[in-house]
Length: 209
Image 1 (cartoon, rainbow, N blue to C red):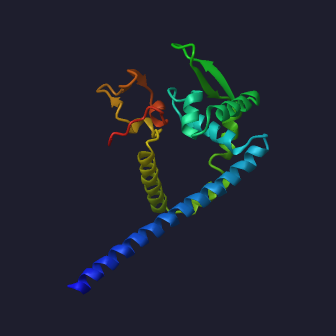
Image 2 (tube, rainbow, N blue to C red):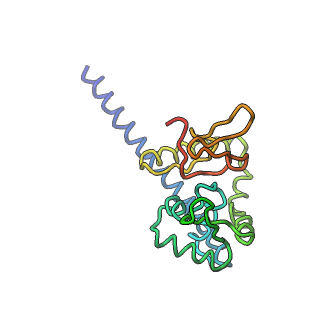
Image 3 (cartoon, rainbow, N blue to C red):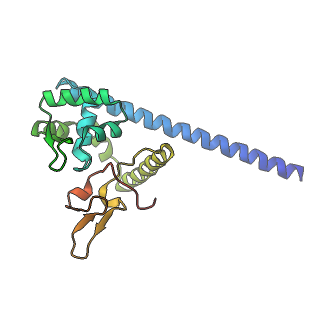
């Protein structure tokens, strides 16, 4: 009986140690990937006098919907201070990568739009040639497995931290497809286009929640 209890105890200790090591290993991989991608982006941005934070802001604006292209939304997504984001956006606007458009219904709200210059920069740098080359050598099954695992990890971190999910519109519980094929956002009561539902939103609320 003592031997059995001791065996169970050792098994539990080993299991905890194993998962702790796996967690550290996953973190190391993600951190290293982040560093390599940041270095790659820094190179493409430097040619335009931009820092990685500028490219990150541009990238966000290229994948967000019309409810999420405000300075406040950029601040929330990047997790930076208002002052830092404000300076970042000023640089991008001054260099002609973005423009500001007033909201039709609320003149206090300003929307940030990518210029043609900004879109061309992103097309050349996001995803970077290095990243594309690395993904191209992976099989379709490997890419699907990595996508699924990273999505699960991202959701876990967001749920643990209480941060906004910024998920894709068509996965949101407010997204409703009508019988006539039209799509409605039940939160804003506005119609959505096929392009809208493929973009991320600051108001996103997962169907599973």
